[in-house]
Length: 138
Image 1 (tube, rainbow, N blue to C red):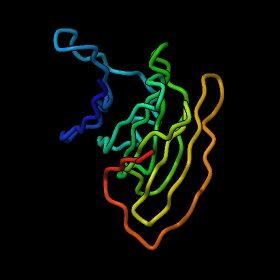
Image 2: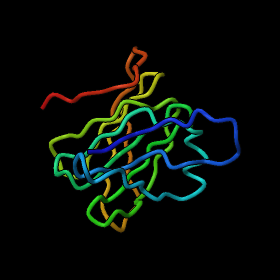
Image 3: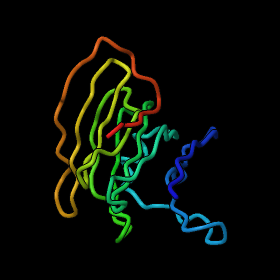
Image 4: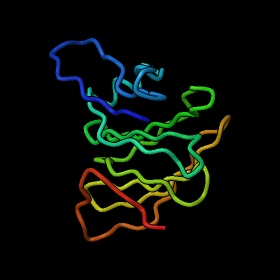
């Protein structure tokens, strides 16, 4: 189970925003990420999604214009992608591959893999204002 959080505090401290749990009695285990990426999220995680294999995790922050990615097997932060007002995230049928949507209509395909920066490619700019959540029907 992945959890995306919001920090409703007036402080310069930046508490973790993404956690994993392996069941009702395991508690939450927060995922580490670089300080600059955490600061960029601006206290707000909008959506989380696992890839189709269940190995990779994505989290988005529309306030920060950033999507961040982890390898959940090693609990390692992988990379991030900047995309203004991105919030929707969904897996594709390909392992390590996600779709991101943004408020201005962009749809971006992101491929992540351990040991390499995320590779993002713009699929289209729609005449739409995407909302916070996304589900890909495969």
